[in-house]
Image (cartoon, rainbow over all chains, first blue to last red; front, side, top):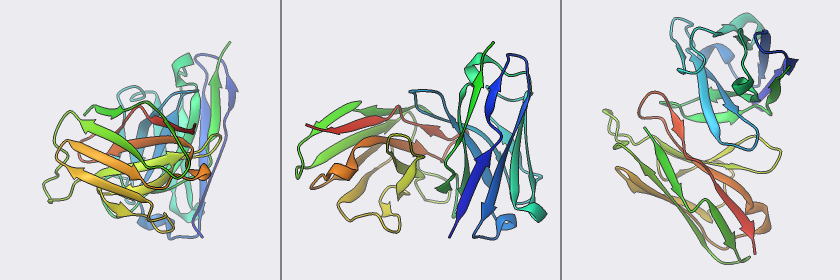
Length: 119
Length: 111
């Protein structure tokens, strides 16, 4: 059974940093591109970042580029999101999602981890 | 690419059908001939679950009450015989153009 479990969320002050993790199981993690998608409270979904099965292919949304860094450790079946210079507008539930079968075909999502940026 | 859903709120009667529209600001036909338009359902407090991928393909375990259709820039999700478990927010999402983008969501509730 495919499982994605996020962790690392919490309360952080503006300008602070946080590192999110996503533990994957039930599939060959190294074979799949992975993504982070976030959802601000009471609002819709926003794609944040992606990393290919080969970490050469890394992309960021305009709102986080230069502040967030995505990475993966295939030996540990884990995906990460290092978030620096956090702003109030980064407050959201962050989901990791697996891409399978084509362009941004997100077939499995984790349960999410809440990041709150507030003084 | 902007994705515009309508309606944003949809009260439905149990057993009746429901239809959600999604329009994109550009054609979603990719160079490989596929159209990367997907539908997700999100229940309160849960993560999104994909229902339909590439316009009309149902995911495993999704009841055949759910169907997707459309082409180019206009797409529709139909729910026939709405059940109580269908409440929540439905999102369309395009993956044809970078960055992938989602519609605003349509909240389905029972009358």
